[in-house]
Image 1 (cartoon, one colour):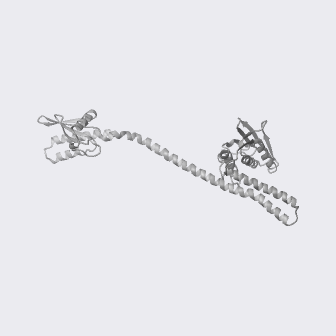
Image 2: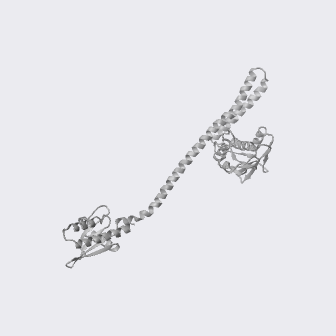
Image 3: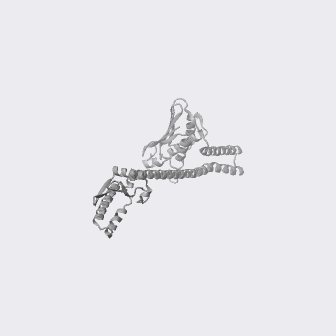
Length: 358
């Protein structure tokens, strides 16, 4: 485009010089033609006489209108003339009486910046990618903050729920003891159990935010504890079972938190079973320092949309559900143990298998 403009300007210069040759000296037409010549502000022009002596210049510099040769030395003028002769065009005019004048027209100064036109799309693409990355980073930060807020809201509700049961029990035993209608030993035993439950709940919630107490202990014991604990708390129609390898599977983990994660997955599995069914926990060892725990149920299964959001804090398919259990599992396994938890397989009407890798 710039080269095309340069050729057009050169043609206009040639036409103007022809008009000057045909005009009477001092006529208005000659003044208009001269004005057309000097209206060029982009193409370098050097005018020479028949002896190749430089008589006038125009636009030799890009930083301003320089028609005055006094700003150049003879050496600089000759250098510019050679450059224009190598890359530019010339227009020769016969002034009569054996006199000639040659006008050398170089390339527009803007030609040297043509490469910028090719660069602009790439610059725009880079700027767009930077803005896109910044936007995605802001979105992900906001998303993580919302997830964290939802998680802590859920933890606050769960804490109130977990603490409410033993506290209500203690208050009931206190009232029963005050009425004189209960055996003091029985009351003391039951209050002790409720206090133990309170201590257990507080221990769990203190571990979830603090530094996990990682110890190389038996994972088998943790799973057995969870199955024993849930056996009296889930429907009798749901069968709980454990498949484990020969020998103990010992990896570094926080027993309190891992038990909580397995318990939540088993409770979630039990809630997915509407009638008779089964929950099987399979423990296997992967190498010397890794363990895999599969929790399989025969519940209603999940579709793809549910699988995608099942670990999101606040997401729940149950009416009145808080959407906390699986979000806590994800935090315990991935953040506290640097492991993985995911849906290994799920089929609507058949069941679901969750996998923990630590």
